[in-house]
Image (cartoon, rainbow, N blue to C red):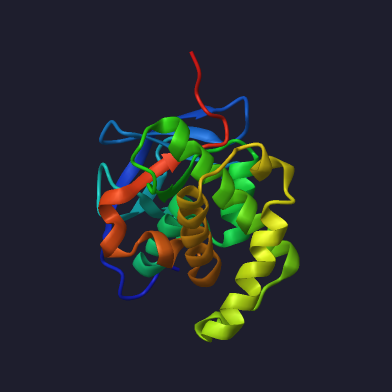
Length: 214
């Protein structure tokens, strides 16, 4: 019942089990560490049961759990890395924008360098540009053609300055250009490919539409 050829695991026993009010169980392992078992587990953990944890060990994500030989959940190392990237950067542009709209923090690229207010205006514009691109369903594969990109770029610009959110920001040309650069790359490549580019690793920042205030 266990995955074949996956030797990255440790076997322990369940020492204690506590039912959580929100659902699921908090289990204490025989080595003293605790772990949350989700409510959708097909097996209810009990003290004394053997448990097998897959992953790189304490302090690293658990990518698989079997209790008494029954699978609670399991991901290969590759699937775990994919999940980590999706959870960190967003599975898609739609996911990235949804997180922004909900007020969650998202990873982006620092483009201003002239203070938080200046930078926030750029990040707001990135989100609004993406909103327009998604709504209009632009064919990003055509943007490798300079002439087709020029046509769509002008359409995007016209729509942008008709957007009341962008209009009230009073952007400079540099700010709009910086926002367009990031939004275009996010739309073309997706957040994971765009934001894991080694060339921008020192410029990654966490941003939110909920701009902090005193």
